[in-house]
Length: 209
Figure 1: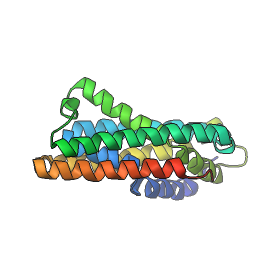
Figure 2: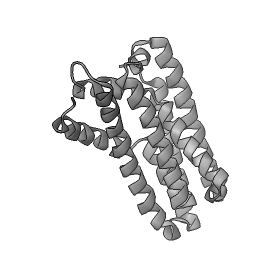
Figure 3: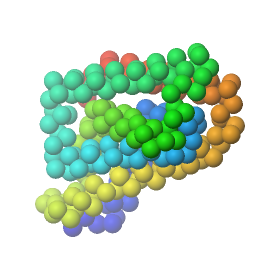
Figure 4: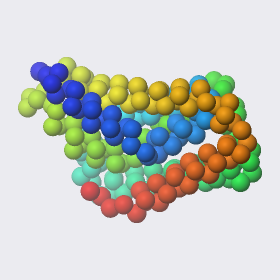
């Protein structure tokens, strides 16, 4: 049975990974700042759903197939890179126009669904997540894990990721009155757009670990 002593360091490593600047952080920041707390939380939940997918498939050993297959890794990598660049270019175009772009409707149910989808795809289309979980998760599973062990260890990254990004969404969303000023909004669009494009290009050129 998985011991609590194993879950705590595992959760700490996952939390540090979630807190590191990356595409997930960029999309939560942008939606929270420009469209408010609800949109940011929807994006955070989408990312959490992606983490759930990776943690489950890694716990059952399926993520190792992606990490081991050069072709599968390349396909996911290129699709993920293209998606990040798409999101980044869209943000840069919004910054250039100085408009709210298409994030204003995110307060609606349809918009929240789209924010959730962006968060989910941003995470699931990142093959580095598969490599991360393949390298990390087995170290915290017992030699002969039960179904309970697998469920428990899979729940840790989901919980840690949800707590962190929901915290970010609420903090940034609470500052929306300041962040929604046109000049500030354009700066946020430009910064997050540049970051997403840079991360997409970096992902596209990165070799398989």
